[in-house]
Image 1 (cartoon, rainbow, N blue to C red):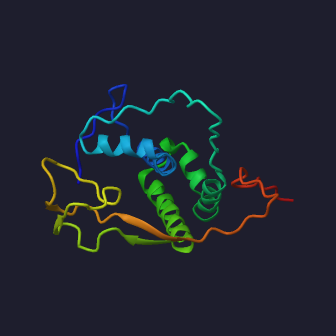
Image 2: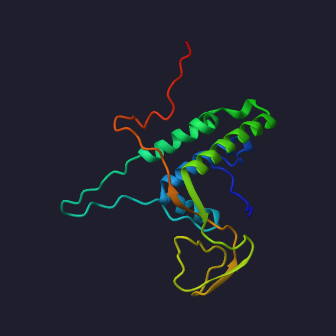
Image 3: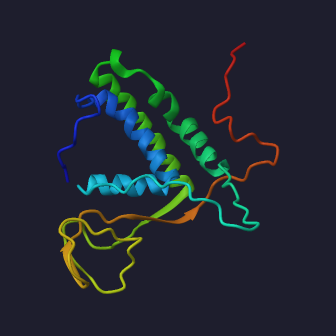
Length: 193
């Protein structure tokens, strides 16, 4: 479903060459940040996105917040670099390349990313119906698994057209890392002798 997109902050719509690295950067940003994903979904659906969350004042008492470990995200990034050269592709200035050259490189990146997903994740659709089919959502449907778009008014049951089946991860098979492994090195430098 294509919706008109607002121009960028400088009033110029980005070219295809500029949108490719933006898309890959957005992918990782949305995977890593649920608040960013919610704002993106609202913007995509034509709603005013909720403001970015602000840090609330800490509650009194000995509340300790645990920082999430970035190791799994860094490991996934390393796998995408190893098999798809994703960081190299996204970091490359594509303005000097012809569309055919970019398309050929994008095909290799696509194949590598697909390989990583197949090897390390089991994915199933959230909904089994074919996209475009009519579905009815009864009261108590899982709002985390199904997002309502369009003219949402009233109470369930809701009847509508399935625009995207969604994806759910059923299994993650990331390799185990040695304790001394530095996950921040997602691609070692290479020196040929």
